[in-house]
Image 1 (cartoon, one colour):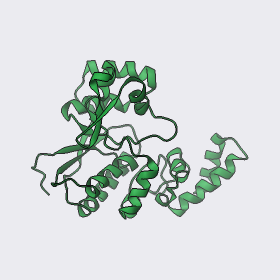
Image 2: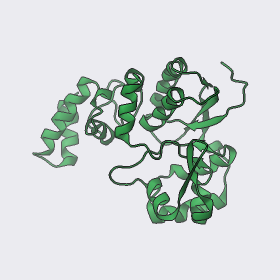
Image 3: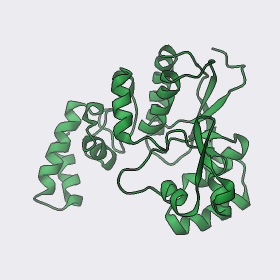
Image 4: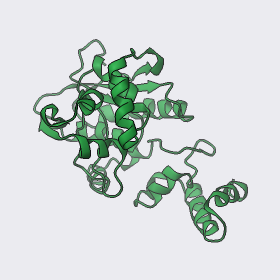
Length: 258
C-alpha cells in the first residue's frame, strides 16, 4: 500500500451502511484517474460497539481494495480527545443544536474538518423523517454541487451552518437508501456489506435483530444484513410488542431469545 502518498480525499468511515456504501461507490464509480483515499475513524465516540466497528472496517479494507482501481490507505484512527478545540465552532454548534437537535458528534466532526477540509460524511437523502443534519441543511442552508459531491453554499447559508457544516462534503446526499440497496446488488457487493456494523446490543458478536437500528434494517428490506438468529428475535419482538409495551417487549425478547 502507498501509505506515504498524499490522500486525494478523506472519508469519515464508521463501518456503518452509509459510509461503507460510499467506500464501495468510490471503487465502483471511479474517475478517469485512480485516487488515494484516506478513511478516517473517530474513536472515543461513546459507542459501546467501537471495537467491533474498527474490527469490521479492518476486515473490509482488503475487500474494498480488490474491487476497484483506487488506492485505499490504512484506517486512520483519531481520538476525539485529540481533536483541537475551537470555541467559535462549538458555540455555533450549540446554537444550531438548539434549533434542529444535531447529534453531539457534529461538534467534533466540524472541528476535525478544520484540519481536513472537504472530508466526506455519509449522509443520504431522507425518504421519511429528516435527521438533524438534513434538517439543518434544509432549513438554514443550501447545497451546491461541484467536484462530484455536494457542499454547503456558503453565500446562501447561515453563519452557524457554515461554521458547523461548511468544511464537510456530502457525496451521497442525493441518493436514497433504496437506491443504495439497488446499487449494492448491481455491483455484487452484498457479501462485503454484510460486514458493516450498526447493532447497539450484539449477541455473540452478531446483530441482535431487535435493537432500533436492527429493526430499521429489517423494515427497509435489508434483512440480509442480519443473521437468521437475529431475524427470529425481530419476529419474536414484534409479536411481543402487540401484547405488552414496547419497553417490556425488549426485556421479554432478551429473556426468551438468547
